[in-house]
View 1 (cartoon, rainbow, N blue to C red):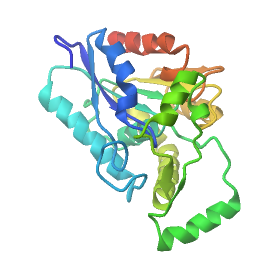
View 2 (cartoon, one colour; view 1 turned 90 degrees about the horizontal axis):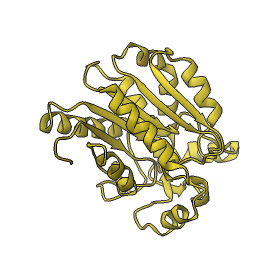
View 3 (cartoon, one colour; view 1 turned 180 degrees about the vertical axis):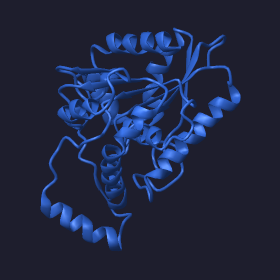
View 4 (cartoon, rainbow, N blue to C red; view 1 turned 135 degrees about the vertical axis):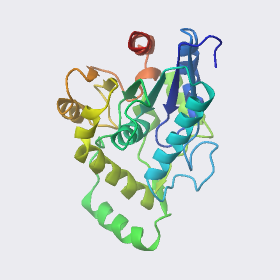
Length: 260
């Protein structure tokens, strides 16, 4: 937290990672008198729960709700912005689709939210997974995320590879909850248009993990005055970990300060 803060960002990390990978984002925001809080999602990082597994995707939403209420209770006068990356972006979008208090947040930021998987899964694997879901939902398999897909920065790739808190497996149960959440986010997109706050949506144009074209289609369903959108050519999945990251961190910071 920073003294005399202008706003607070509640951050939600992606699949297989942890909030510790967002320290540079927090520092950047702090330099503009914006605080950032959050935590590790269930089953990831240092959080409790079976690694790489979730029984119900809504458990993620409930955890995020706790972080937002913590911010509201401890800093009631500060504007609150909710930020999510990748799966965290999917969580954020599902959270605001279920939000009853339209005035709870002042704005939402998502980077490369996982609204459509960027790789095709063979049908035979889906058949086996469907069978396993019924008898062994906690069985874990490789997530398919390759370190060199997250960023074009070799230092980021090396750190990701060596990070002991980055977990490269997901459970069968997690996978089907994840797929169901993607279906739900598209079904309920109209609910986002009824909210009272704006959205900053940044999509990596060369994303190999999330389909960049799906982002264009999703944003088309939102009211134009509701969303500020950029689909950025050549960038890999983690926009704020790319060589050009400062340009987009600046865009986010200026958007927050303008929105307050």
